Image 1 (cartoon, rainbow, N blue to C red):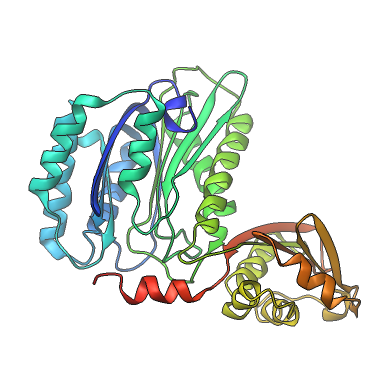
Image 2 (image 1 turned 120 degrees about the vertical axis):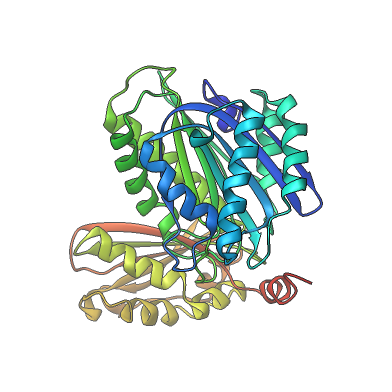
Length: 383
């Protein structure tokens, strides 16, 4: 197994019909969630914000192709009916079903299609690699690759599957993430660990700077593996989330390169994260990475507008790619070899490491380059 079905107590199924997909996951236990902060949050997000307070889920239903966002009173009724469809298909209490949607904003759900798909795939729920791949495929929209992660410890596992490619910015992105663990974790511990992991991973990904209406991250703990140390669980959960977050960044719409920005020497971790997110989200940095143009001054400029204080003359900056680390600035002194810096940008991953010289805190953010393909995808998204 490579993700959710590698966790004891999880069964899954999925189906994709052109751009319309449906996924069902059966797993019973403690649950927590993190949701979109957009004022225009979708009906399923608002529904789950209410339901997750119970701290328990027995299953999840997810559709792709329609976001059920900005759909008013009808949209909320549709989300509730979709929950009833999922609960019926899984044979569980309607109050213990998680609901998520992704796709075009401002369109209503095709509930007859969702009902038909749910009835069809409910007969094929299983713990298999094919099942988790079917789920990953079902929830994709503009994604080009499936996104799976499985972190195994001696006594328990954490697995996850996600989708996300465009409209990705801090405060989560256009992502649906389903995480599962067989560790026995109380809802409060699970909620705290999930929020910390999200802050350090999904909330540090920037593809285009737009924030979605539909972000939903749900985590269910089946408890089949028994109690584990909260710290050990939190570490494994963060590792799983980090893997998924990096996969989202690498699969950004139109992307040809993964961009990683590591900020060290900041006064606090949050300030380090602010600088890292600012740099990784800069269109000028992104286009320079795409063109393999060693215009490193754009990194310095983006860091300077992040709103975090540091002494410019104490900054150090390097670029890494293809296994080569090239110094650009050393303690405020320009030391760059432009030819070597350009060579370092030739691979599929480019890393900028920025030391602010203003403290001991570190944070990393991820994104991708900005290409013509991004404009092509989003200029014809609904047509």
